[in-house]
Image (cartoon, rainbow, N blue to C red; front, side, top):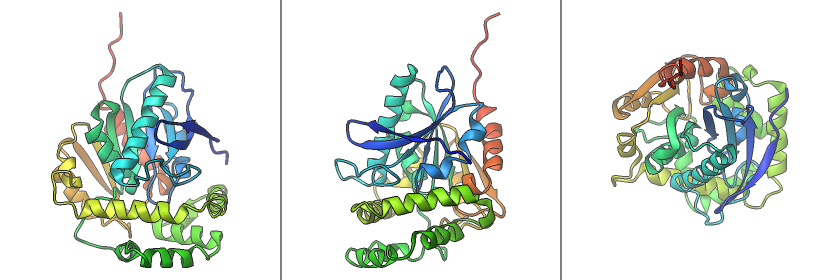
Length: 306
């Protein structure tokens, strides 16, 4: 399997690695893909080619993840990550010579980032597709009950140091086991690429800080009582939203689907059976088909001159 090679982009506040799929010539719709906590642009390499006939796609490594160095301002909050995504979109718009808003996909923490982006920079976002978005819920699952413990200062650093001593192959296998119902759906080529990325990242001194700071920033939004709390932001989203939840997701409770259906004014919510935390990797064909039917086929078509 061939994955789109990554390239380095220098932005005003960060340096990021991105992967692009499509002819990028315009004027075609564009889509930007945002990974979750501990993930990278590799989390989208199965879905992006399936949408290449409809959109030019770009997946980025958020600052501190994948092959992107930390953000220059040290802000790992969802809002901080959203500023980086906004900068990526603007640079891509300039490169394409097209300032049209883009379709934004976000998985897990990437869904929380995409939500921040849609509210803070609405002119950049055409639609949102949220896959197991990391939004607040009162119910926990066996896969996420430990995260508040990991977020405790000092204890989190100690636990993470111990975890990083486990082999890269074992860590990738554990992540796949946690995120997938059918672990065989991860191709050997992608598993190899994910493992190679972990081996490479083990050389970077900021890996632990990027993970813990992003986790703590995300959890702070869960406890936010202000008008900037995630579900209050969801009610302000004016763009069409497709929210996909996995019935067997052990990280994001599927009951979030009901909340999403209530809160997003223009939301379409689907609960997927036999699906874990990363539907775009476990069932990319299904996700592509749902996106076409829910988002693309309902989008206004440009007028055609006689």
